[in-house]
Length: 263
Image (cartoon, rainbow, N blue to C red; front, top):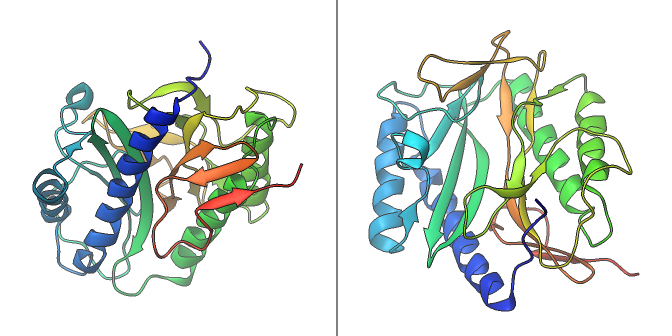
């Protein structure tokens, strides 16, 4: 099955959903501090999405997921379930937000520091974000997904980090997860060719230690097998006529919303 090409009307809805998802991450920032629980962060985000945005938190009850956001702390790679454990000074946490508005999805995540992070933790988060940025800057019609995956892998592995291979980015639109799968590793010149109107996420998961991961007994939480730190950043993207539009851009991002390439 190939990727869904979005119509202009669908793209407008994707822009709205993407903006709302980004706004949730901006809203929650001041609440991420020492002593708060991820369950409290979940409740704040849930109330904001439902009451302020009049939108739907996509993760809630998605294949049985019990909460409205994913909170992945320290060695948790992805899909961490919010709980009653207070965050500690030095923790790093990924908050992953997906909202549904008018039937369309916006999906984004970022890393937050709790108190003062270690030099190692801060560097991991920064390099992971840079790997996402360099991938976004490559997106335009004609580029292949293998080119993008290879660039992320090469960059992260250049710092002796490892790329998680079991989980990936994905097409997105009326469905939470659509074709294509967007791997964060690969070979140049392979994979699906990008076309104008495609929408998908890029969401590299990068580990300080080895790439191997483990699924916990809750059947959601994914952790590094060696318990090393892991980081992830994610944006929802639209392939434009000659570049890319970041549908989930935040005010703290260091890229422009629209990147255009000359022919």
